Length: 258
Image 1 (cartoon, rainbow, N blue to C red):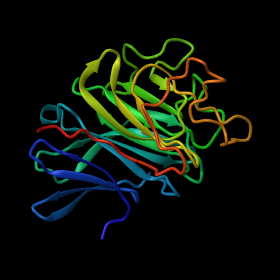
Image 2 (image 1 turned 135 degrees about the vertical axis):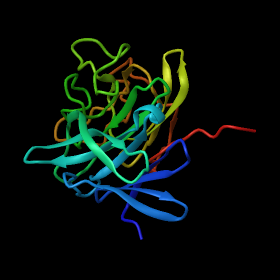
Image 3 (image 1 turned 45 degrees about the vertical axis):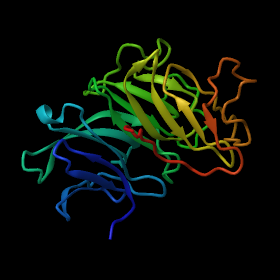
Image 4 (image 1 turned 60 degrees about the vertical axis):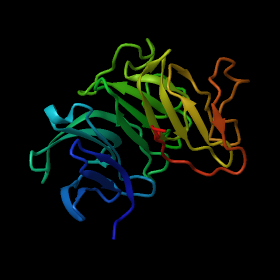
């Protein structure tokens, strides 16, 4: 009886928490669902709403979780908001917007909005281009990017330099829907991202600095390559593409063990 469950995470005691696109954050424990927060400022439209969720890697000490959602208080954006979970895990409170101004479309299209907490406490945020041709290659716009920030939403060392917003790790994306991280950075690579193509070429990409080559051009013409190496010779090619037709992969995880 859920309404578009979108993302989930596990607390250290194995309690499962999850989002529903309609703005509800809940826990599942011992077969019982408990509502932790009903977020009234979530704008639910099309692909947009309450989407990404991450549990802080140091949750036992700071009680932080992070959500990513479409927001509209007269000014529309996608934003990341940090919450604190009480000791008894009955409520999420003290909302603190840490990243605001991620571009959003009124239809909710291409909202992206996946967030993951790395082992060092930094956050990786996948954003969509809001189906706007001005976002993916613009160094000042947060849409069509992967952001790398600290717990307060500030850019971290190793991100792209000026003229880029210092929260941007890489750019040239269409709609990042999945992020999976290594335990530690490996030769400048933090993990993998999953990206929706148009009618072809969903991608799995390395999470590293650089341009990943999406640039739909005037009037958002989507017949261009997902990674346009003619326009951008240094664009980073995908590690996997779906070809035609797309299959819309939306998440990723590592399986560890024998």
